[in-house]
Amino acid sequence: MRSTTKNPIALQLDRRHTLQGLGALLLGGLAWAPRRLLAQTTERAVRFILPVGAGSGVDTIVRAATAALGKTLGHPVVIENQPGAGGIVGTSALVKAAPDGMTLGVVSNNHVVYPSVYKTLPFDPINDITPICVLGSTPFVLVVNPAKVAATNVKELVALLKAKPEAYNYASSGNGTILHLAAEMFMDEAQVKVKHIPYKGVGPMVTDLIGGQVELGVLALPAVQAHLKSGALRAIGVGSAARVAAAPEIPTIAEQGLPNYNIEGWFAVVGPAKLPIAEARRIQAAVAAAYATPEVKEAMAKQGNTINPGTPEAAAQFFRSEMMKYARLVKKAGVELQ
Image (cartoon, rainbow, N blue to C red):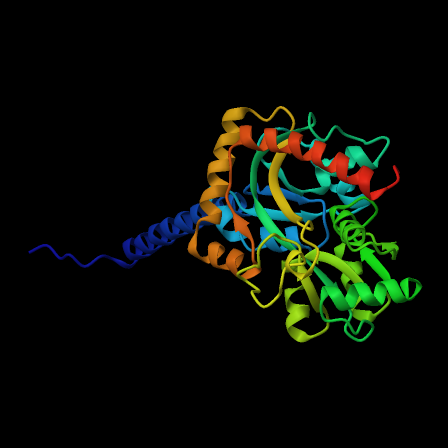
């Protein structure tokens, strides 16, 4: 009977072949692994350029939906805050981007206020963008520093401002911004004159309000909710026509004796000009789906935001009507052209 036991040389050859096979497998795996890792780490992200600083109302609204947007858009989402000049810096960067759907922006009322405030702009607010959707609205709230202002309601605040107008200053996020106009609307309705202190964005404005360098200002509710809860700031009233579900204890300014005061912020997703309409509609559907997810809906409700994404066509019409509206408001408020 023939023996099946291999001689030492045959065993060595078998071991060598086995090691060579394992080595080939390992080398193949190592060659494949970097390619897979490279594919993961270089996946192209969708840039969301926000022409506002971190911590502002728009920033808070977009960041709450970043994860959901990444899923519905099919790409990771990267937020780029580019504040400055009331939003002109960030919007200037947006309009220069390629119209391929990979660079988007979220703008607010400021976008359509620009033509009424600035003699010249580095872009056309209508023709240099592609409106994708008006995403929704956010309530404004008039706040004061409680250590500097004893007033707890509109009547008391107006009495203080009339008695000693030189003793108080109001802050805004910049000349001609919607927060500047919202405060000017209040001064006009209340028939008081208070010195305006413009800041370069919401962040430094809030910092100085809390520090007492300025006494009052109008801000988006999401930007100051935490400071209202901590007592660092005090709410005098919300600017919307009705009370806000997220803060029902804050009365409206209208119900406190200024019935014509009604202003709120809105925010819209836009892309560069010449973005194909099919791509704009695809992005609109993805944005609407992201903001319809339970976790994002809950976050928006807590912030007091109303979400109702419209179509690109409706957004384009809305931008034009809002531009005319704010042209009248800027003229009435006496805001000088920059």
